[in-house]
Image (cartoon, rainbow, N blue to C red):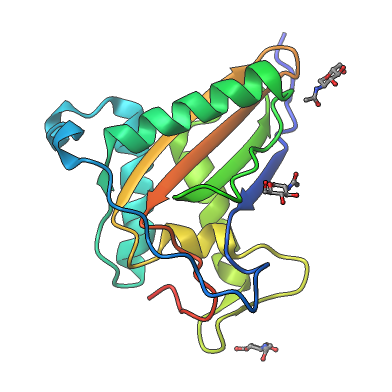
Length: 184
Ligand SMILES: *[C@@H]1O[C@H](CO)[C@@H](O)[C@H](O)[C@H]1NC(C)=O
Ligand SMILES: *[C@@H]1O[C@H](CO)[C@@H](O)[C@H](O)[C@H]1NC(C)=O
Ligand SMILES: *[C@@H]1O[C@H](CO)[C@@H](O)[C@H](O)[C@H]1NC(C)=O
């Protein structure tokens, strides 16, 4: 029997917006690039995360991200930690060297494209002219996707059986959402 599933999606981005008076941290050194396999070798999921990001970036004239295997590995460790030790809740990425977008979704999996599209859906609440977000919206997930100075991407998803949910994290290097800067 087919059941109609109500998909619940909750998005979160890290940003440096809570530290209004503190200058943004210097960008971390880039992860080693020699671990990045050639584009042809990317797993299907990686390619899908990447394509969905780069489509949104192209729409606003921002160059593409590159997949970074080290960032993907870091994301994988983090989502598995959240699954195994934190009841599938959002990771606290306040002290991360990377920008981070997260998505908690009901159900055990959500496609990479659907994950990224949920973040990009915030675009309509973002005003580029005054670099602000409509009340009660979180445009940070969108602005991180299209952040021009972010060059590398790595994402991972964990299925959380107990919670019947999934958690997806994408890391960006260098991090975006620097307070006082526009994404592009
Ligand atoms: C996870 O859930 C269990 C059972 O509800 C609870 O005992 C535990 O404290 C929770 N752990 C965290 C890190 O929230
Ligand atoms: C996240 O970690 C930072 C630094 O350790 C801490 O100050 C902050 O309270 C934490 N936030 C949450 C929601 O736990
Ligand atoms: C930003 O601009 C939009 C329209 O482009 C406007 O609706 C909104 O009120 C503005 N916000 C601020 C904080 O000026």
